[in-house]
Amino acid sequence: MHTITSSLMNSTPLFNSQFKISPKNHQNACRLLPRIQATLAPEENTMTLRRKVVTAFLSTSVAAGVQGLGNTTPPAMAENWGTRSFIWEKFFEPDLSPEDAAARIRQTAQGLHSLREMLEAMSWNYVLMYIRQKQSYLSKDMKNAIVTIPRGRWKSYIATANELVDNMAEFDIYVRTPKVYESYLYYEKTLKSIDDLVALLA
Image 1 (tube, rainbow, N blue to C red):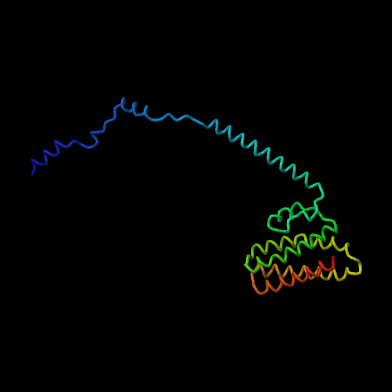
Image 2 (image 1 turned 60 degrees about the horizontal axis):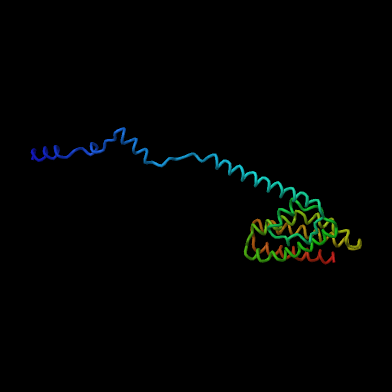
């Protein structure tokens, strides 16, 4: 047994002894590797060019938008109060004339009628955002539009406008909760109030 073990140890070289790297072999191995050259300068030039193009485009767009704000924009050209019109109405819509305010009240009534589908789908966040955005300018429109009707109907107009504001506030509360039955109830009351208001503006 001792003889077999000794012969195995003498005939089997160590594993690490088979792999010896001389300085010459190391240099040859390094020569086989592909040479990597720095390419940062061209990329930096490309990024700089892109920044210049984007900056020029944005500057032109903003200048055109500011110039367009100085012109009179008919409310009929505005979108029918979808989600894409929120930012425009809130931040860029100028004060409207009495006639334009009355026209926007009519379009708001149409938009509220089309909100039923979202209410039935219980898209509470969308409904809440929609009615709050309408509330932000509806009071101003109702004040501006009162001069378009005869003075004899002002009392009825003011009562209907106050009723609309109250119903929309209650509608907002129950959508935020949310409570389904109460939301439908005050949605119908809101529609009736704004329809009555539009009838007075006719």
